[in-house]
Image 1 (cartoon, rainbow, N blue to C red):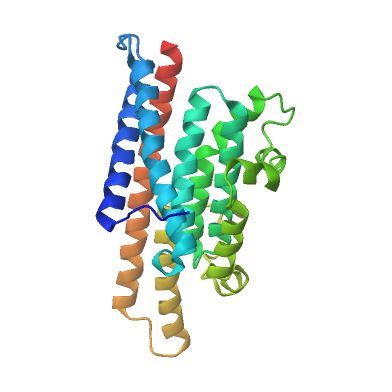
Image 2: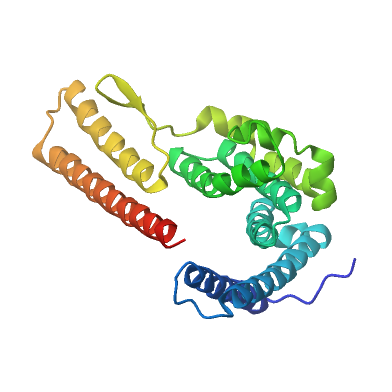
Length: 279
């Protein structure tokens, strides 16, 4: 395969163009839920989504060609991230066109790459970030599985297990090689042993599962600040006001982020209810 001419500027333009087209598509999709939607809103939504796929395909093809012919020019993690981006757009277009099997296969493949990145995460924040991207498409996986007649469509793990390696390879040739390359480059086994983990957070005796990367990130800072203060106390150097000021500061940041996420969730829930009522 001949490597397409690629320059960093060209790759940036492709990514920018894909993002621009995707934003337009999502804007028209939002309009389709409104009673005063323009008559061509649905058509324009799909048209822009096709453009986004065209750009992301070019971006993916260039990255894959570079990886095969000049491995030093692009690492496996970057190729995996571009592949995840490409698969996300392709799955979205298939979903919008009711091509449920193609959408489900691409989403399962995307999920496998993200799960590999989660396993290779350096800390709980990177892990939560990968999980957030996984969670974002899970409702689409459930709906596609339901449309395909899966009796247990609510069981995400069970649904994606039905999409085997051969199906993924047929949908995206070279995906098996990419997963293995990613695992080798990131040294998954060693990363799991040395990962900087967030300690369990409990409330009223129950473990609180934190899946937001923002919350996990700030809680890691809280954990680190508390650890330093406790370490000084155990070392007999005194706790010091500066250490406690740091703890209070990061706790304040954590509260601020939690409030923002709660407000965003309430706004999203209200918008979803209004859209449902209008339908």
